[in-house]
Length: 239
Image 1 (cartoon, rainbow, N blue to C red):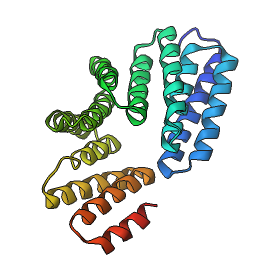
Image 2 (cartoon, one colour; image 1 turned 90 degrees about the horizontal axis):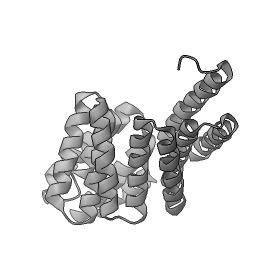
Image 3 (tube, rainbow, N blue to C red; image 1 turned 135 degrees about the vertical axis):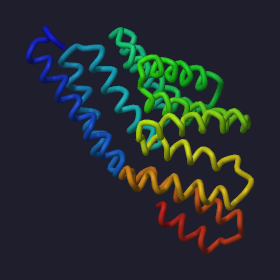
Image 4 (cartoon, helix red, strand yellow; image 1 turned 180 degrees about the horizontal axis):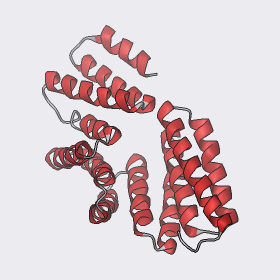
């Protein structure tokens, strides 16, 4: 921002670059290196004494912790990120922190608070014109409703997320939305087709970690069909 000291601008630029690299490493499944970048981001934010940079770093660390399965730690970090974001008074940082917190909460202990946080994040992203992140936040709503057994509401949120992500070319978001649409699909043929579409999106986006998730879900579908050898091959490929 104009008027920001040169040192502060350099710190912010370095944090942005580390954030992008960590995202790429997560996509490749290299969580240890992504975690190292997140730790460096936290060190920079601490040195800068900036609530905004701290929130950015904590949000990145939250995602690394989630993908490692460190769910309680992820919730704690995301809660701290939301506090930092509110201190920064930056609306998009608050929205991102609500989104990260909602996903972490959903993976740790699903509940109505997940829907409230994700819905608020989606509304803030909508107001800012960010269709990609609005769609990603609605994907979390879809996950929460699926956990609650509210299939129709979950599918509606997933379809809304898919439309938004498709509108702006967000393959990662579209793949996640498509993956949600198989959870309550009774027709195995449709489930296989939708899973294949999700896998194609993740392959095009280069998200190996998400490809593993969809491949495992394909295995579950084939297992349901009684094709256990094929299911086993897919489970091994997912691993």
